[in-house]
Every structure is written in structure tokens, then in C-alpha cells.
Length: 269
Image 1 (cartoon, rainbow, N blue to C red):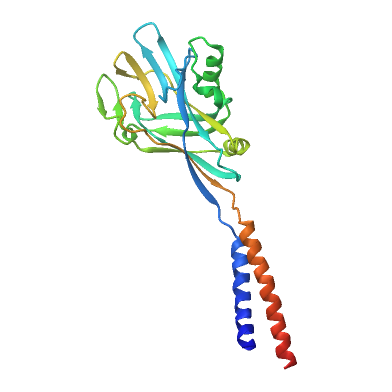
Image 2 (cartoon, helix red, strand yellow; image 1 turned 180 degrees about the vertical axis):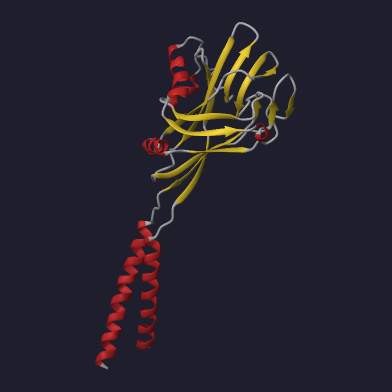
């Protein structure tokens, strides 16, 4: 009976040691966060409260507003993220493409004051103008490019559009750089905002209703039967489970002592 116990103790000791080594090599964790806020600001400083239209580009309206540049933002809640983020990218579904150019590029930047973005601001508001400026001048986090073929709805010139805003568009992926990762880690446990602006807002627009538009849109906010995807996808640093490793370590120590006692008994025998 003692011999069998000692034999099994030796085997279990080796298995426990192997388990401890595997536990020390913990794996990185991946996560996906859907946006919790979105909207846009015009170059007049105007932003409609809780209006989730995310167009970036140029709009020339027939009427009193005349020329308008529009910049947008997305807000993500990092409350549940506790480990350092080591890599991340934005995943944005392209809802619409406006203009006769073959491609359009946009830039993602940092934004100060995520809490105040959705409040709503009247034209000429100093806070609204500051937000508009920040959406296009903050620290660069990454860049992306959109093609007409990737959009659910395409208005490529004249007054003719094709597709539907309710069709799924392709997902554009924007890899976030080291500056973005540093800011994400500074905002763990709270909300963070990303600003988007079109790189070239010159001519070559498409006529849509009373507007001439050039740019891209990620969400229309009107006439939609589905909400396009806007995610922050990330990976965190490897984290081991201290409680589990402690149990394995204690069990390993006990089995090791039993194994040594068994070897001592065999030598005396």
C-alpha cells in the first residue's frame, strides 16, 4: 500500500510541476467594445445632442448654411478593462461614400473631454468650435482609406446613388499606434473618445438632395433598420491567475515532501 502511494505521489508531483509551469505562461486576453456614443461637429461649432450621425467630409448646402466641414467622433467605455492594452484597432463599418474620387482617406485622433461630446452645441458656441478643432488637430492615432465598393450606399457624382443604407458595408480597420495605446491605458476604467476627419475636403462632391457632399459616413442615424458596426478591438498583456497558481504550488510542495519521504523509506529498506 505504501509503495503504491509513493509511486502515485511521484507521478502527481511531476504533473503538478508541469501544471505550475504552464500556469506561469499565461495567455493574452482579447476584447471587443462597441461604441457607447457617437456624433459630429460642423465647422460652425454646431452639434446636435445625442444625434449619432457620423459623417466626415464637406457639405455645401443650398441655403443659409453654405459651406460646412463635418468631423465626427466615437466614444468607448473602458470601465471593464483593467489590464494594460498592448494592441488595438478600430473596426468601422462603411455606411456611405460620397464623391467622384476613387478613394478617400481619413485620420483618427485623440479628443479631450469625452463626457461633453454629446451635450449639443449651438452654431458659434466656443465649446463647440473647440471640439470641432480638436477632432481635426489632436494627436494622430491612425489613418484609414475608404473605397466606393466598400460602402453600403454610394453616391459617386451627379444625383444618382446606388445601394441602401440598410445593407451591410465592409469593415474598415484602423490600426492604433503607440500614442493611442498610451492614451487608452491612461483611460482604463473610464471613457475615451476618438475623433475622425477627412484628409481632403476639396471639390468633387456628389449632389444629394439639397446638399453637395464629399466624404464618407459610418452611420446615417435616419431611415436605418440596423446599426452599423463600430468597435474598439484590443488585446491586453498576459495575466496569470494568482489564486490558481497558489493552489498548484501548495499541492506541489506537499506532494514533493511525500515523494522525498517515500524515497527515504526505500533507501532504509
